[in-house]
Amino acid sequence: MGPQVLVVGAGPVGLTMAAELARYGVAVRIIDKAAARTDKSKALVLWSRTLELIDRMGCAPSFVEAGMKVTGANIVADGRQLAHISLDIVGTPYPYALMLPQSETERLMEQHLNACGVEVERQVECVRLDSGPEDVAAVVRHADGREESVSPAWLVACDGAHSLARHALGMPFEGDTLPSDWVLADLHLAGLPIPANEIAVYWHARGLLAIFPIAAGRYRVIADVGEARLGDPRVDPTLTQIQSLLDERGAAGVTATSAIWLSAFTINERKVASYRSGRVFLAGDAAHIHSPAGGQGMNTGMQDACNLAWKLALAIRGLADPEPLLDSYSAERSEIGRQVLKAAGALTAVATVKGRLLQVLRNHAAALAFGLSPVRRAMSNAMSELSIGYPDGPLTRAGDHRSGPAAGQRAPIPGGVPVGAGDTPRFALFADASPEGDALIARYPDLLEAKVRPAFGERGVWLVRPDGYVAATADQGGWKKIGAALEAIVGPPRATATGPRSR
Image (cartoon, rainbow, N blue to C red; front, side, top):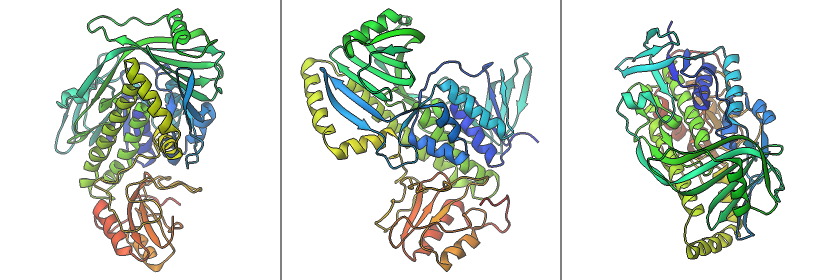
């Protein structure tokens, strides 16, 4: 039997997508035109929310063991600290940014995918595709030049900023290229005056300098270096040039040695209008690219995959009506992509503002704002991506209950097995035990966890999606509202069970 889903691209997003589908028992095939995984550090950080989501997959411990926990970020200007943002105050099992080179993220996720029984097919490139009413007509080319026709029911394009799928289906990137040149260096530093597990951001009159820890003694340095020279080839910086930037903009006495990766780049801020075209979905950089400020690009893509996978699995396994469940992917994730683009662009603009008067005003305003505890907490939640949610999403049914998490918000993780673990995407009910709750579970035995979990707050009922977001809330006893919300999301109960029950 051919694959039910073809995943094109085996970077972090494609690997996450394939691993999630394989976990749910979907026949998936994943291809990549590259001969091997990347050996570059590229995207460095896994934020708290991403770690929570891969914890559902059962592989978070291996990532945490391999990475470095960063618990704070500092903003410095004119030799004084404007802000210190703590990540260890956020309410999550993962109160830190996990610094891990993308090469390691890919290795660990591929290892997890292999344990699910799926191998990446390398040097296999998708060269043509068309989305039909019942399947996708795709042609893939192997390393020896042989072409193969493939007709999966669905295709997920995770093939990056130059996505073949996006071009083939006429889904244009909309946005801009920022008019500035940037440099990046992964190297060893000595003499930093901040803790080894914290980020340092310097707002200098000449531009931004940001320093991110990667491992003991190893750091990433990013800086803007002036207006983009459009049409000119970008030249990678030298170690001497990076040291000059550190001397000019950073703290005194910091020395750089042993460069591992030196690169020059420009920043694009672009996204597609819709993440779906018929039976083809776009995820990750194929759908959106933006400023590296905040380090949220890879995380946003991996969360695209986690959003789509449970919906696609329910549709393929016949456990839910495909529409509007699958359409909700684009509606939800496109809005998140828009928010990330806006926030990353704003951060970049603030950090690179020109003119001494504007810089003085910016520094003063930042010092005042970050002096307020609510602002620091909001920033911590935004950085860790715990504030991401779908309050206005098409699957969200706002209720009238006032305590606990609201509809569309991420559900707290009090401990134990996270919602969405197991081999079937299951919703969870949080409420006081009642016959009505048991009756709803009996109506949807393949879609609801077997037992009601303890309520988040007083006298309420919460329906939580397989990806850990609250789908609906109601006052105690409002089981009809919760049942109606579930039916609106997945359709009426199925007559027969399909698939094993987890837990």
